[in-house]
Length: 68
Image (cartoon, rainbow, N blue to C red; front, side, top):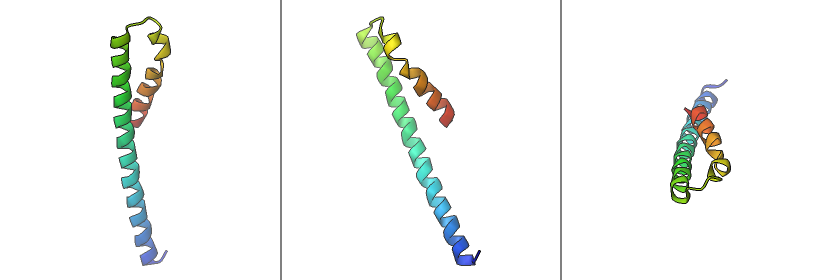
């Protein structure tokens, strides 16, 4: 690999890494907002069917664990 191509490759990898880090940060924020929304809905509505309807929280928790 020629020196300039190598430098460009490393630069591109760093840019990709920065972009992915930003994406992961945004996903974590979205997960936090979803968790808060689900908790708020459970408190506000206080209906028995919510536990069945909001099982998506398990999926969200799994995503959070996977990202950490």
